[in-house]
Amino acid sequence: MAEFTMELNDEQKEVRDWLHGFAADVIRPAAAEWDEREETPWPVIQEAAKVGIYSLDFYAQQYFDPTGLGIPMAMEELFWGDAGIGLSIVGTGLAAVGVLANGTEEQIGTWIPQMYGDANDVKVAAFCSSEPDAGSDVASMRTRAVYDEAKGEWVLNGTKTWATNGGIANVHVVVAVVDPELGSKGHASFIIPPNTLGLSQGQKFKKHGIRASHTAEVVLENVRVPGHCLLGGKEKLDQRLARARERAKAGGERVKNAAMATFEASRPAVGAMAVGTARAAYEVALDYAKTREQFGRPIIDNQGVAFQLADMRTSIDAARLLVWRASWMAINGKPFTAAEGSMSKLFASETAKKVTAQAIQILGGNGYTREYPVERMHRDAAIYTIFEGTSEIQRLVIARTLSGMSIR
Ligand SMILES: Cc1cc2nc3c(=O)[nH]c(=O)nc-3n(C[C@H](O)[C@H](O)[C@H](O)COP(=O)(O)OP(=O)(O)OC[C@H]3O[C@@H](n4cnc5c(N)ncnc54)[C@H](O)[C@@H]3O)c2cc1C
Image (cartoon, rainbow, N blue to C red; front, top):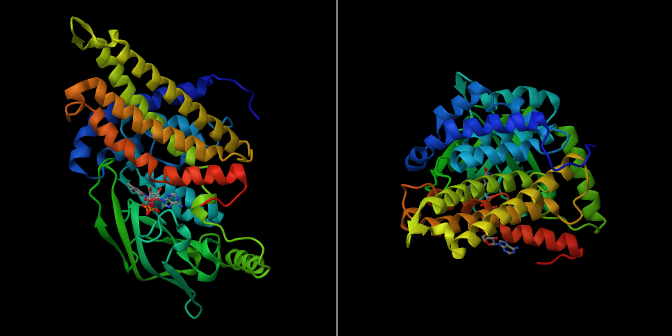
């Protein structure tokens, strides 16, 4: 375990500064254009691939930083650049994590490279769990996967929604029901290889923020995939289902809602994205308040403005500390006895929403226009309290963890 320190080491500072440079020189200047276009910024992803930021190697290196701070640091810098472009760059990582967490070594080696492509031909991947009737309530998922013994294939049918990179991905990871009796314990994840028949993109959503990130429905109609596309393999799945059936028969353990119980370790990464957006808006507001003059002096000379900036910075630093604590706990295998992962995501995402609104206020009329970036940052910030579990779901997880009671 790394010794406690509040300082990044030299290597971390170097990576942070390198990422910051990319965010400042490549992402930030492109942000307004891709927000207006509402399209995936392929040229920016390609630039990121060329310098090594868009690759599994990069994420693996950050992930295995023994302090746990590699991923939150990377997320904060990229999303400081821009949230929509940031998500376009890291969205593939969400699908890759699905394979890393559940896949065999062979599956990891086969599919993750196809998720990223290479610098000359970049690809993206999508993780498809949410459905029109199964958002927070993951257990009510309906997409069905049935095994065709004769052909050794899985057949998937259903509609996924809100999938980041859905329909444009080279590889889709789809969560489906294999045993409806078992609630979320009866789910399994499947790889849908490139160009598989029966998978199509439904509507592409026109969004409030993070508009450079593609979000769409994914329709699965008699999608047939070979048996080896089941993540983890059939033997492991059969064993897992048998254990879950035993427990269900014993009448003991309640089948839990996966959205409420899992993701504790991945949520700090979303918190770090929110910290990046909040910090970006705060910096614009601070600069503006120091240079904008009214009544013959800079507006920051007024306590009403200066105190807002003091509160903004205090909340951002507090959010980062919660994110770093949870990330440190995750890498060191500490149990989340107070749902510290959810805590960090809750606080950081609510902070981003509040701070970006305060930034608009400090910029006055200019803050309300698209000439200045805080308007976009405020629209972007609203996503953090919604995806990867809404703020209400984070509170539910925290309250249940603290009380040990199934609060509704
Ligand atoms: C831009 C974007 C990208 C996304 N990317 C992906 C992706 O890549 N893959 C993927 O699978 N999903 C993705 N999602 C889906 C996202 O995770 C869901 O939107 C989220 O889980 C909420 O589900 P819902 O939208 O169905 O809202 P609902 O679950 O219908 O919630 C509606 C409201 O009710 C509240 N609520 C629900 N249940 C409770 C409760 N028990 N107690 C208190 N309040 C409650 C919620 O907090 C919320 O305020 C994405 C969503 C968006 C908007």
